[in-house]
Each structure stands twice: as structure tokens, then as C-alpha cells.
Image (cartoon, rainbow, N blue to C red):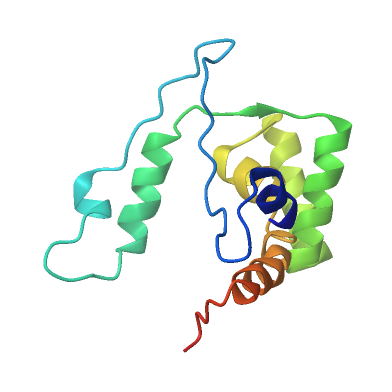
Length: 139
């Protein structure tokens, strides 16, 4: 965040929270389905989600999505699973990927893309960056 703030000349009181890329994709990305509004939209007050319904909607949305396995991404996946849940879990997760010959959407997102073992590590840097700019989010 510090480098982005410096590059954009944001000063001490502004913090880049989101980046909006502008341009045209080199190829047409696949259309992503949306979750049903009954799962994502809350009326009048927040309601805890029905986890079974949420999981079923996710499965329906990602039906048929896979990612090819390479030795490198399988090793990264194994490392992530082991760091989060231990060797026994990692062995089961890797065996599942190998049996299918591909990563499913959940395995890709939380084992490779948003790596569950490293995502929380960025929280300290984010909190530090917003605190430096005079924002106290824990008040």
C-alpha cells in the first residue's frame, strides 16, 4: 500500500483501498453466474446465511469449473493445506485433486489463488497502513 500511495501521490491521509483496472481483455472471460438474491440480499436486517444453501448455490455456480494440475501448483496446494490443517488433511486434499486430475473451484480459490495459509498475513500491513493515516478502526 505504501508503494501505491507514493506512486499515486496520495499523501498521508489517503489510502488506496481498491484498484479499478481500465482496458479491454485480450480474450473474452467466461461469464460468471451470480448467486440467487435470496442468498446474498438481506432485507431490513442481516440474517446469518444458511450454510447448506450457500454451499449448494456455490456448487451450482461453479459446476464444471476445473483448473489443470501441474507439479508446481500441486506442491503449492499441498503446502497450503498442510499449513492450515496439517499433513493428514493435505494428503487427503492432494489425493482428491490427483484422482480428479484437476482442481475444483474451491481448491483453486482457497488453496492457490487466495491461499488460505498466507491471506491473513496481509492483515497486519493493512491495519498498519490505515493507522498511519489516522484511522482508528478499533474504536
